[in-house]
Length: 131
Image (cartoon, rainbow, N blue to C red; front, side, top):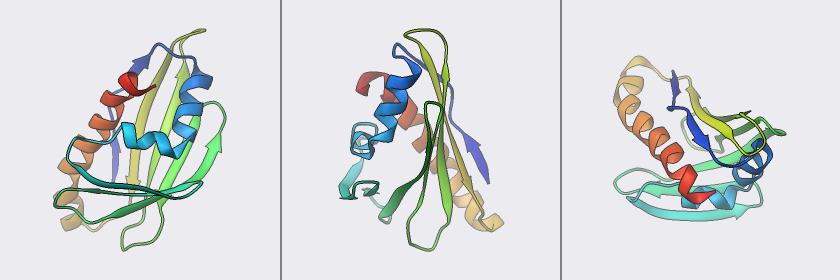
């Protein structure tokens, strides 16, 4: 299953956007309002939970400066990646889009597609306010 967030334009350079997303502590500022838990476990790993959902642990798996960051599931039953693509639009402008990639059975994919799409949209919508 592959999902994409809307593209969002930031009034920050590609490097600034990359540096912000590279610091996993900053993801707390991007989370939806219904977050019930956020905890940094290690330098490149954090746990979060939304109300009524199980806890999810994400780990930074790859960082290709200044245009790509890959977070992946760290443990648990589901294997997926959250990929941030950052494109330069000039000196102090950049564009960010998040991609979700996971291999799920059709029933599971149908159940999580809506919530994951909304989650991705919330992350990028909160980005301009947080950076």
